[in-house]
Image (cartoon, rainbow, N blue to C red; front, side, top):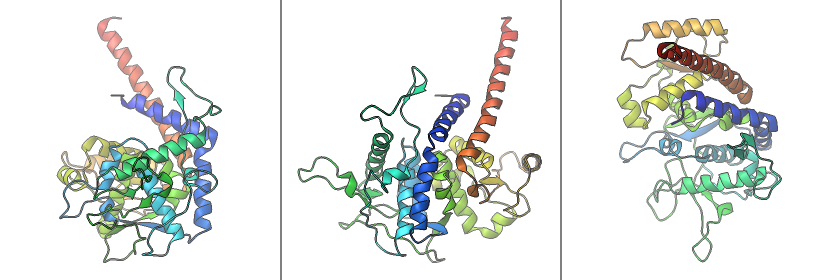
Amino acid sequence: MADARETNARRLRRLTQMDRTRAVDRASRALRDTWSGGRKPDDVVLRVGLIQPAGDTAGRAPLVRLIQSRGIALRFYLLAVFEAHCRLQTEAAWSSNRPLTGLRSWADFIAIDGAYDSRSQTYMPDTKQDRTGSDLRLRQIQSALRTLEDLGPDQALVTVPRAKNGGRRLYGQFSLMKETGRGGHQTPDAYTVPRNHWSVRTVTVPASFFLNGWVQVLHPSEVATWLILRALSQWARGQHAETGVYLYGKTRKEDFGMERDPWEDACQRLRDFDLIRHAHSGDLDSDPDKLGNQVMDFWARQERQRYEPYRWQVTDRGLGQDAVKICMRELTLRQKSLDTAAEHRARKKGEQTGE
């Protein structure tokens, strides 16, 4: 398994390539065009069934199952939900004639870094057949649709019809399902835009999450962690504003299916990206300097009991910024710190062995 230094370097390399090719900028522009030409929703409303299974439902929620898969399945589902909010009335059933590729297509919404050759450690040109950006994005979407459908007969988040001979999937004719899945009836539970009302358990996601590139650059485990914390902050608004929200290990694992290491790592990255902060009094939209953040983090560590989870507050301040710039800045700083620590360990080991 790759260590933190290798993982961070690989992520930074991919972000640098996407920044060079303006992949995220172009995808965000397509999403902004869809938003501005549609209903211009301030928020995207998600049913909580995506995040947490119902009490009478066995197994894990789709969100956790999706972060365990490779590819862009979670991202694509969220993008499809965003597109539905831009286009459909509340409680309208989902239907779409948007193509998979071409102008104003689903592929326009996806940002990827391209084909990377590990031997030469360079990105391969997209001039060859089946290696163009459009080809690569199409394959990612097809893989995402397979993953979303293969969640199970009842839990599938999309349905994809087959050709008449029952063989190949007709990806371009996929249908979106509700956050809880296709359901167990003969008629699929097709997606409808939910009403944001106290009687319906939902979590709202600001449109800026999609329009400023965050949906493209966050890892699935980070998206899942952020959505869970966001849900907790909206279910317990008073507690969130005063002392922050948290999850004990048993609840985190049994109710949300999140293991400790990916949860804690995701919390730290989300904090670095200014999407969450250690809980403290003060305006959630305030903009403390770096030193102020370090002081607050110090007191958070001092006040936290040994077996007590960190308390977090979700802020929307970072969402208004360019996701690529923020992530590249913070991951570059982290890479320097990891490199320095690795050099220190190597030097110490050399001193101990006399080399």
